[in-house]
Length: 199
Ligand SMILES: Cc1cc2nc3c(=O)[nH]c(=O)nc-3n(C[C@H](O)[C@H](O)[C@H](O)COP(=O)(O)O)c2cc1C
Picture 1 (cartoon, rainbow, N blue to C red):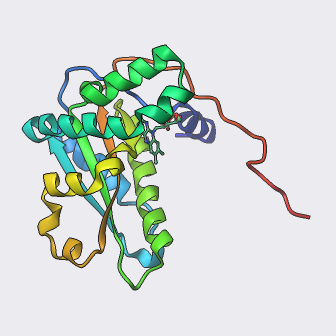
Picture 2: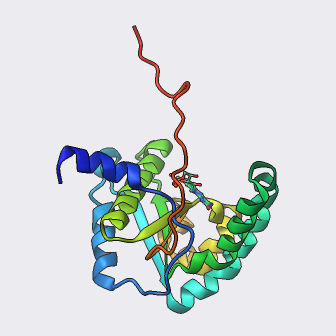
């Protein structure tokens, strides 16, 4: 891939919220997870922890996704035009038919600053987003599960882990993914006040 292709790839990434009814092969999932883990991390602690739901577990998660919608729908009602609001509601109810949900956790230990741990996991999440793109997959990173964080923790069974019991394991987001079944417009980027060159 040359320079232009690389920048074009970054530009072409969009959140996908409708998916084809097509499973994603395990070897592809292995590749995108391994791409995620190429990310830098504070003190190289690689403190990302991924929990992957497919099939029955993914289907069971739908009720939690629907519940998380209740927590954010009022804010979105004010922000989105009606057609987009309805589309988003449908997405939360169905996850757009995405066959795979990757729950991304941070293992925050007292040896690392809190925000560094969190940031490291999000670097991995972006790698994951980009790996989906090169695999012909689409994905959508979702902060919505945080609305019902503890319930999701219990649903996934992470509450049984020692690091969770010590209060070190924290859900940051879910990434839903699959083969795209729509081509959404590019969400516009803003420039104002984003970059400040210092003299
Ligand atoms: C941390 C984070 C949380 C997000 N949470 C949600 C979410 O809960 N539901 C959703 O539909 N999209 C979610 N998104 C996707 C954003 O809405 C999307 O990235 C943004 O609108 C820009 O669009 P684009 O990804 O197509 O460029 C989230 C993205 C990030 C990075």
